[in-house]
Amino acid sequence: MSVDEAQFYPDLDADADADERTTLSQFLDQYRHRVLTRFGRLTDEQAQTKSLPATDLTPGAVVKHLAHMEDHWFIARVGGGDLPEPWASAPFDTQPEWDLESAADDTVGEIVELYRAACSRSRGVASQLPSLDTAAPRPSFGKSP
Image: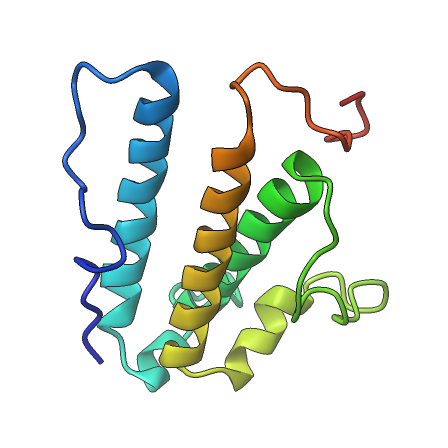
């Protein structure tokens, strides 16, 4: 499967004269692009293969976890909203690593679409922030907003 990210990230060239917010957004999009182009080249079998003998992590698990973290930080923490599916109904209470473990049941295409959608939602939340100094409505790491 080949992932054409030119449509998803039309301008990946960083603007050296950009303000802090634009620079941050550009760097996030560059990293998101790298994840998608590298992961999108894998077969389903490769995406479900353990990368290192000492861990159960697979490339699919890592990217699905990244999708979860996009939604966790941008939607829930920064945006103050409720997590969308599949996270809303995921059994995190009994399976804390569900995002990692459930990736074995997903295809590369499904994980790519999940990650793309999460990144899009993150950009939507970020675009609504008046400034980078805006306090998040939900605390992070047990601290105040």
